[in-house]
Length: 110
Image (cartoon, rainbow, N blue to C red; front, side, top):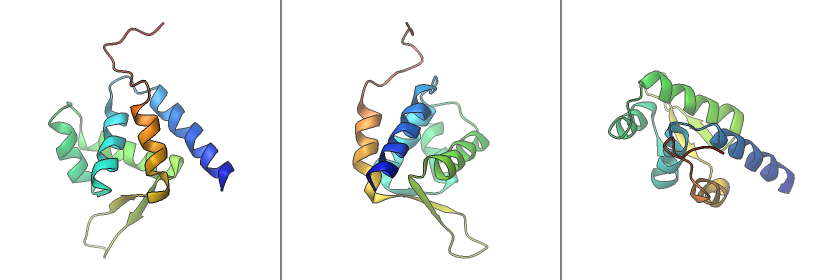
């Protein structure tokens, strides 16, 4: 289990490294707080702070789900929207990574 956790940690670090606008870190922070959300709910929360489209949010959540492996997806029926849930075993890992040296687009890169 340790090697999987190390791979996920590495993937999340790389994901956050290229976060020039802060959207990625914000989405992960939202998942840490609410534990589960739909794309529309995430878009509503993010659009209050950032000028971000629904497609951008959907794309990032899809990437987090498929490539990072920290989310689960659940759909009640074909008529309901997909609900994304944060996997409990990665909450502590994400907390450390999201809170460690947060970079914003205003900070100069050396």
